[in-house]
Image 1 (tube, rainbow, N blue to C red):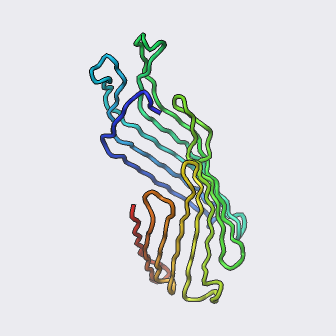
Image 2 (cartoon, rainbow, N blue to C red):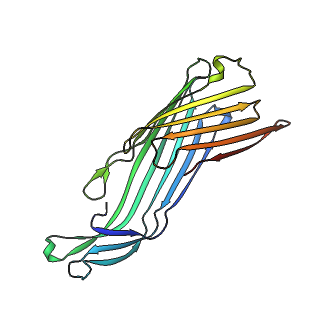
Amino acid sequence: DLSINQNSWIADMKHYSGSIAINPSLGKYGTFGLSILSVDYGEFLGTVVDPTSEKGYADTGNFGPSAFALGFGYAKALTDRFSVGGHIRYVDQKLGSSVVPVGEASDGATKEVQNDLSVWAFDFGTVYRTGFKSLVFGMTVRNFSQEVKFESEGFQLPLTFKMGISMNVFDIFMEKDAPHSLLVSIDAIHPRDYSEQLNFGAEYTLMNMLALRLGYMYNRDEEDLSAGFGVQTKFGDRVIALDYAYTPF
């Protein structure tokens, strides 16, 4: 919330992310994970209102806002049908400094304010295998956090609810060990800061060797149709796989 300053974007944003997970003793103790996210918003030209200037503003130099999140996650299968997981993240955003007036505006006195904020965020999720064929339900809640504010307006992280369902539809009319499968999945997403969205996906697999994939995202500004394929083969007790996906974004 840099309402005092006028800013122009003069460089590209850079985004970095990574994660690592470990599943000791084949899941006996659950799965542990670490995640990191870093965003460099690029370089901006900072200005401040200056009624004495011919242009009406004065330059305050360039500045580079940034943000990062560091998280720890844990998940475990409580039974052969029910699994739960959680993720806690420390989130920090630095939006540079602002020059703001102090006291009466006519005095001309100013001070520099650092626009830095940090907050803890939480994610939760669960997966339930119904026992009816291969039907599976899933649910997640992401970015649950307390309200924070830079200057005058408070906000929360973009809280997002997601529910999903998936099933190999060939299970309904084919034997369990059939050479074909068609996995279909649907996600319903309810973000705090956007209207509801739907994701559709399908994967056809032949002889556990060839996979053809198709996806569609509904009510997105950028993404919509995606497609891909995968092939895999066995060498002794090892499997070598190659996957390709195309997503216009």
